Image 1: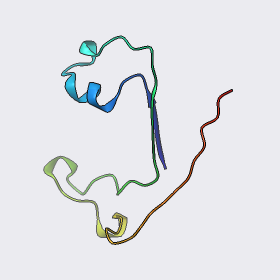
Image 2: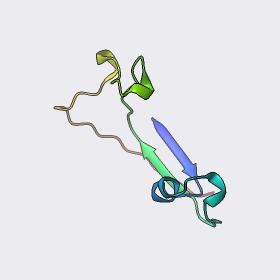
Image 3: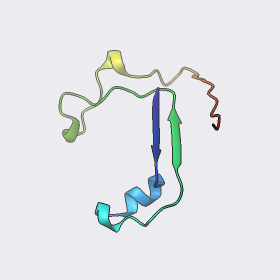
Length: 71
């Protein structure tokens, strides 16, 4: 499982060319992902895929459930 809680949306992060160009934020963007296919191949910057044994099957259905509760 992968969970991110950051003060920026993915769009804001993609649009800013440097961290100091990010807007001042008063929000928290939470992303919860159930699975991630590996961490890259042997040459992550060269566009290599993750090793076969670490890939998710494309012809399978995946599901998960989570709850976020306030204090």
